[in-house]
Length: 508
Ligand SMILES: Cc1cc2nc3c(=O)[nH]c(=O)nc-3n(C[C@H](O)[C@H](O)[C@H](O)COP(=O)(O)O)c2cc1C
Ligand code: SF4
Image 1: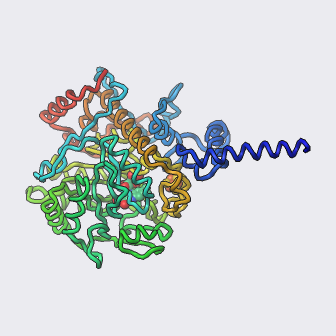
Image 2: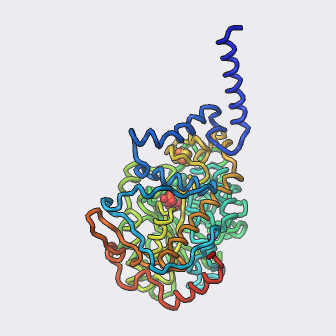
Image 3: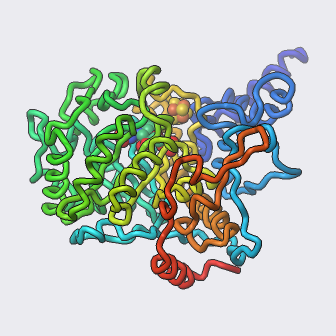
């Protein structure tokens, strides 16, 4: 046998061993789905920083999430060191719209390494006296993503992770399915398709909703008016993802686009929306809220004014930014329809502050807020909680290949193809989602302590400034036209929250 043949056999044998190892192991979905060639990704990932330094983009340039952000989620979810060395790569003096968090001269004591206990400051449904009102155990929760846009194993991983981290998972508008039932608390979302609670003709069915939420650990109901990536369009599940299981759950045809209408048929204006909210809350006992992107502001002023009298009202409002994610949307809707989160939220908060009803509502934010500095800014603007969607996907293995609409997600997160989902181990990935949520809560609380605040809800618009790249800095209050007293808890609330956090034993 000549030398070349022996070398060929040895190399072939080694590749075979690597391929068998890749298919059998469960830790890495890329290797499992793409045996042997999947390792090239790791090679380029490892050598990428050096190559990109000369050729391509900087670590803080890519969208929607840059490499620094993805690396932080990845390291946090794997419970690896998520610190950096040497110093910031950001050019603080020349960056515009750059957030600065102002540290207190006498910050609060340092947090214990494992401290991540950050419950909500407001009782959800408390102000309206809902039977099943509760204080959310976590200010960070899983945002709406349906079974259909995400795979069964990805939904299961997030649900199991929610149970470990003590947060909730929002079902998304595609209905409540078996993958949601692995121990995690749920927020049930209804979109215009009313999947899971509809009549055969597609209208809303209250008795089906009551039965559905009673049979699962549902803590609240969210009525989806719109989402930031595609407001005005309703839901779209591309044909490639409409499997027999999903078609049966949603009551639609296999292999055809599943499109929900843009508007609800159960109500048509602010007053009938409030009647609907009260009806659902009365029948289920649960807190009931709405989710929406922000465009016209008249709706929000009208809603806030209708709540002034205290007879009817939503328990929570989730504001989604125009920069929000989606399983599938037309480019122009994703790029141009709906205000970015910060501008949209400031307008909605302003409408409620002017009507004097901000304390009756829990405000939830979503739109690239799953990083500590972005979340802290949201709290400083008046948000009470944060929902995370794509950051949750990153934690369970998403590599931002942006093919969610094709049904060919390489890591099994946003696909229904068994070819790809077999690579995603829900138990392993559940631990990663939980570790990410805990790391985010820890860093958010650490930032609050650096500002001298015992809870993120005690951080105000005066604690943060925006610098503009021309040596000018302005407080958030000025940038977003907040009146004095907006997004600031009153002294009694501050004292209560500080006393409450003191009982949690979070410092070293
Ligand atoms: C794959 C995917 C599916 C989604 N499905 C829904 C949905 O069913 N209902 C909804 O209200 N929002 C949905 N969203 C929007 C998210 O819940 C969230 O509001 C948005 O992505 C912003 O959060 P993020 O920046 O943390 O991703 C989806 C987003 C993604 C990425
Ligand atoms: S890996 Fe790509 S296709 Fe899969 S969820 Fe992430 S962005 Fe979507």
